[in-house]
Length: 260
Image (cartoon, rainbow, N blue to C red; front, side):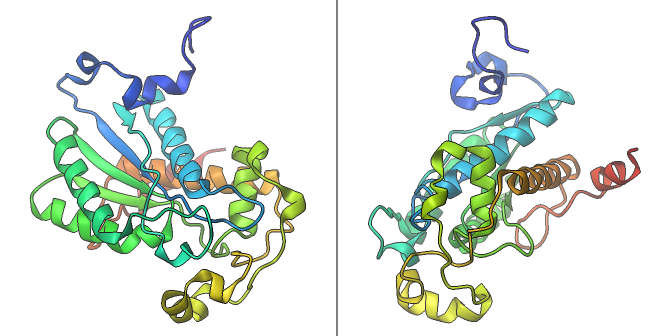
């Protein structure tokens, strides 16, 4: 708990607010790096939606692990990603795959000089191919790096009910529910070829892939809790698949199932 007049509790897990002697011990610190984007999210959600979600999931997971005695820090969020498919909408800023790749690789190389390990916590699906490529190189070099994501199984693709519910819970001030409207509701897998070839705006003029109109903060709270619980379990077990992604944590899952 913070002292009266002191910094908010989460600041103690924020790398940018730490002092180097606090990171110089024998245990080593696990560094979580949220990776987001700055891109359109329909008429009702902010451009920083992916960034906000990744940052929140990393912070909440770190808080739980620190409470259990783990040395964990959360790096400043990477707010730009590979968002070329959204560039037809004003406000989107994409750095592309090559720039993102170099950024992730050099960040991982540098942080691994002192960190016990680095885990990229990704909030934007368009970053995934580059995350896999960057993490593969870093692991080939012998560095303890992996990634995980904030995707929701069964959730809609972009700016729909899932993301809107999450933001209504995490940052209700950032959502304009009165502007929420359905976009294209065809499953993303059926649209993928057209999205890649023509961009999102050619497929969905309002930028929404899904239907956000039924989103609620209560639903968002449940989604966030599920995401954080999964990520914490992954970080406890640290089992990495062939794509460099953390596998679900089996020990934490068993503990959760057996809890009263």
